[in-house]
Each structure stands twice: as structure tokens, then as C-alpha cells.
Length: 452
Image (tube, rainbow, N blue to C red; front, side, top):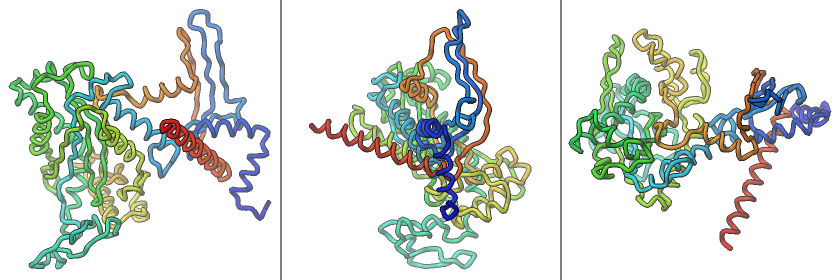
């Protein structure tokens, strides 16, 4: 035993526990979660009329007197099993807003719907990948710091130079960080601008727009190779009451595209004045893409968009190469972070600007691990489709957790810890792999039946 690795010895110890079978059931119930939350407490369900106890559960009868629940982390780099579940929920949430379902009428598939992309502006030239030379210049030339203004190299997509500035001293890191910190406000101004442009095009007073139409959206933030966020969004035009209402006859996809482009050009957000940086006027980049989704809703376009969004929300910082999956609490954390020179410089810029009183409300140091970006990866308007909470409740109902009418439930729970011991982690990985294999087999069988 002493010659075995610590993880193996711990796994053998767990397997010899008299309550190992129940512990295994708990791990299986979490899907082999990599970082489960340990809770202690009880739940009592009472009849609301008679006061009779209908059901009582207490962790005192569990292994270690605790219950394991999923961590629900969306990042695949942190917990692959929970991120897979989150991706599935995201797919259904996004798809419901495109084709209907989940209490959203199927008529939404015939509404004006766009898939748009808004980019960050340039903060300085960076190396690019592609079939052409990076940044060819016939006249050559150097910047004021003596570095070449161009690059004639063919960079592979995964080359380390891609996304890095041609000259780090010329690159505007302060503007990059402050743009990230105001990206949420830029999006809010953009949505307001689209509504105003639609109202103006329809000959309406702007304040009367909600009485005629409603703009619904779901958006996802994605980091480019240059570590700058750009936004993908699904935008849908409904009637005044949302998905249940047909949009007005003037509400066409073409009009919506024009409104999107016009609003993206006009949005402007000014930063607080700083003696160190000045006052910056922030806007969207010049590259704006607005494409109409297929009008019948039955083609691959809708599913492809939903799958793309679902895939992206599970990516961790190590997948995107932008930031870290954990907060940075000191300057030393930045120096030790496993990131590129570009990302590290953006982190240090966040830390430096975050110490200035004029930028204190932006909490740049708290968000240095995301390079100043403070928004959620996925956000949606209220009327776009269902919610994560509703999808989780539906899954719990499907698994047999049925609500009892006129019942009162009392919960008493306390957080104990989280994570696995080394041996428990080995067992959890094995359970997660077995469940993944079972899903693949079930999917193959379902596909075979469909082809018969």
C-alpha cells in the first residue's frame, strides 16, 4: 500500500467504507462533478392543511453526514460535466428564442431575426493570421520606437505572435482596458439606439415605440486573438407584448438591419476624466456584421447559431487565451499567471488604473483576470425566451422531483466545503467517463433507429 500513489491509496480507503455504495450514488447523481459542493442540513415537506410530515431528509444518514451537489460551473476547464450540462441548457435557451418551445410560441421563427457581430475598435496594429502576409508595407518604415510598421510573415492561426502588437509601446493598453470596462454600457446604448432608429424609420415618436414593437435579444461575449471582446447577438423583433404578439407590418428584417448598423455607428460612451489618461470617447469597431436568419426556422442556421453560443459559453480562459479562470488578488498573482505577454500587460494595466480614484467605480482590479470586462458571458432580454432557472426546474421535474400541491417545505442547509480528495477525484472521473460513454451509446442507438 505504501508504494501506491496517494490518490490510489485514498481511493482504496473510500472503497472500503461501509457507506461506499451510497457515496457512489451521490457522485453519480452529480454526474461525476469535478468540484462538488458539500452541504449539511435537512429538508422537511409538510401538508399545508393538516401539518402532516410528508417527507423528511437529513444528511445525518449520509456518508460523512453531508450531501454532494453539482458545482454548476460553466467552464469546461474547471468542471467538464457541469459545463456540458450548462451548454445543453444554453442551447435550449437560445434555440427557444429562435424556433419556439419552452413556453415560447413557434411563430417566433417567422419574425425578423438577425445574427449580429459587434467588434471592439483598434487599439493598435497586431499580428494577423491568414493566407496573406500579416501586414505588408512596400515602404517599410518604423514607428517612433524604432519598430517596423509592417510584417511580411505568413502566420499560422495558432502562432504565438497572432494577436500580439507590432509595437507594445504604441499599443493603447489603457483604452483597451477601459473599453472592456464600459462594454456593458456600450451594449445598452446600442440597444436603445436600435429602438430609436426603428421608431424614427416608422415615423413614430420614440416614446411610443414600446406600444408598437419590442426588441428581444440574447448576446454572448467572445475574446478575439488580440484579447479584445467582441459581441455576437441574436436580435428579434416582436409585437408590444413580446413573443405572443406579431410585430407591426413595417417591422421588416431589412429595417432592423439598417437600425443595427446605424446604432452601432452612433454609439459613444465617454470615460471619467483622469489626469493619467484623459477623457476617452469609446465606440464600437468599424466591423459590424448583421445577417438575417432563415425565415422558416427549419434549416440548419438556427441550430448552428444556438450550438455556437452554447459551445462558447463553456470555454475557460485557458481556451480563449484571455485572462484566467480565477480572480487576481495581488501584483504577484499577475506575474505568476500563465498568460501571454499581451494579456499580462492588460492585467497590469487593470491593476495600475484600478488604483486611481477616478476609476474606482469600475473595479478594475477585481476584474483584472478578465482584462477589465465586467459583463456576463451570456445575457438576454427578459422576453427573449425561457430562463436557466426554468430549465433546471423542468429537469428536476423530469427526474422525479415533483412539487406537491398545498405543501410547505422547510430548508435548513449549511455549506461545509467543496471539491474532492485525490482518491475521490479519481473515482469521479471514472463515473463521468462511464456516463459520457453511456450517452454516446444512447445517441448512436437513437441515430440507428432514425436511419431504419
